[in-house]
Length: 537
Image (tube, rainbow, N blue to C red):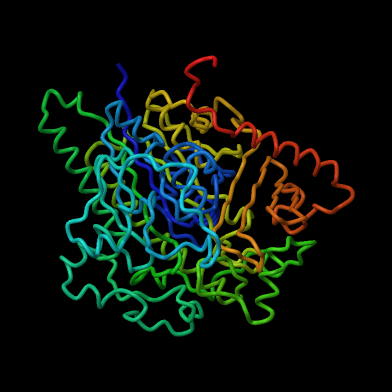
């Protein structure tokens, strides 16, 4: 019987592709990630199922699109009736653990934006909640009840060490640990406690602050150290098993960092790792746009009138300085994350586990980071938001360094893990295994991708919440918004910066019609097929 592999999946939050050294960024300081990626397959066209935190993390877990698993937008919780690939691994004998950010259930007590106050809201939903505890990640519950814990297994994870939220104001297990380490913990976190950051514009909008928290107490370091402690414990248990060590269960460890998400607060030396003055603006920052969609026009018009909303979570038109700061602080946070990954990897090597462990790395979605003069995310499907890093480094006997330009998607990660583990996926999982690509056996596994988005907010001055779908092929992107007469059609080969919208171009109406039909067919292909029927009628 062949030895079963271990898995470590590193996940960051809000990291667009292109910010790692292995992806060609000249200012990146990511030697650990670059070295691991060089041993495996780096994907150059890897996209999310939706560019929103909670829905895409649910797609990662279930290998299903948001329209199927039910978490179409932030503010919905992953139903306990959805089966996750981690559950399947656990049932097949793998130890399972998650350290860091989960965000599979709601984390705030903020009221929803939809329906808005005063709008009609029906008392009952058509879909009943599946049995199981909800609201387990609400940060307020962790504050109000010092004994509050998750019910486990939590979506398949036997062990969970949780940090909830963003910046240096996180909660959950990390905040409890912080208070045990530093009696004055509350005076070290938040913008009120921040150190001076002269010249930084983002601090005025609470989108960044120079945290007073030392790096050894920061959530990024905590996540790494908790992962190392788990590896130490598992290795110790294996050693104590003696002659039975070969029968010790393999593990799946998800190491999930809450950064580089805004507000940007890299600690200590990582704040200064890259100076904003050294950061070049994206090539599209000042580039003229041809027939931009209504959403982009609205953002630029708001900025021209001095009405850009810069203090929230939604995308906004930014200044040159704000874009440079955001990129620099992202690179600082990623340098710190790279240091954390190096600690976990060094522990894996020291324990003699590296050769038997698959390592993968990805993020839950991107950030505009100055692309076409915009910052943050929401209501747009440019590659700055939908394309994220992904690499897969297999065990020693199956490593094949290289790169793949094939289309792939977040929901393919679970399918790839399951095939590598020789565990059968559940009926209705939509992910496609990427092992053929990582091993050079297949040139492509997908002809197109379907990307979904359902928002709560009425952004861009619209009278309805943002709802959109995108079809992505190797050459084109077609995006449609509900309630908008016009869409967006981009030729990614001729226009890699996505500056020219060809939706209304007379010469492109044939392509537009073909892609619109392909989008309709993709949505049919993505329709629910689970469960199987029990009878003919």
